[in-house]
Image (cartoon, rainbow, N blue to C red; front, top):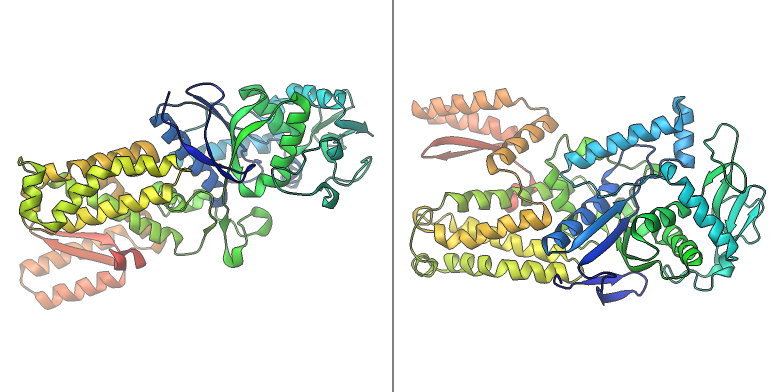
Length: 497
């Protein structure tokens, strides 16, 4: 049996020891995209959180079945397709392919199963029929409504009170304002399927109940999604699933906090404040986004502003620099002997490196606290960077930094960070940041070469003039025995380095 862990269960509102339905196995369902437009960085938070969660669970020995759906028929899809003059199915397919490109570009593993609403109609119709048979839903004018008052525990997940609710669905044929649609009667020109209640299409909530039940069973281990889905979507999932199957739907609910803009407003296409994943990845390495999300606890709100990714890139660069420094160190003495010779900075590197694995597991096993794990990682990186300034470290400290290198490798396997060769990462940073600033790489390299020539000619004033010109372009030049190197200044990030 793999090691245990604890999760904050949204339903109980407390930390709980995880107990699987089957020993060593975990069924995880995460609500996916409604594919009417490109995915944005708000969506990407959930994508990264659950990708990393699955990555970590598998590292620890759990057998995980990860399911994430596509909503490929919906009011928004139908409306957008009509605006573009194409079929709703064509729009959905186009956006699913775009979503997969974003997932791949971010370095995320695709889920094991990606069901779609349009290929799950038979299961949806069968579940609705069972819910009606059990007295929890009723048909009216071609629609099918879930009878909220028939389900006594409605509201337990979100804390909502039935008497104060009104669903967003049109009122036609409903007995109570809080009742919600399981099946919507067909409208002219819209996609529709046959059912016992006439032609129509599924309501939004029923689809996940049917797909999760089909792929993982009537009861599933963990259900994830953004905090904004707790009500009404997940509350309604609980009601219709438990009404249809007669058993608990989900044992552990796991919700990530939202990406927020100014004044705490969430990011959303309907609000017109979105930043698409595709656009971000043109100017930042993909791991920048991953670190940005994982630096905060997954349940916390996460503010988005113009400094968010530059600051995350600064942190990520310091991690890569620390690994690069550690990889260049050599030596054959025992770590303890080297630490004693090099002093307090060396001792700290050895202690932090040796402690890291246990610290990582402790943090991630306690409600998946990636923030704490990254804080420990950054402390280790800072210690390695300080050690690198010691003259004797490069030729003696190799055995001393071996635990730190093992820690960096462990972070790659468990959290998906530092997975790129250092030089490849540094080159990607240069290319993407220069492109974002509108600066020509060829021009930068010409100036660096000109400055080097001036230095060789001992024309110091001219060399300094070129350095200032480069600095005005946000290019930092670093001189060393092997010549001059350069990097792009990451604004506040470099000031903190």
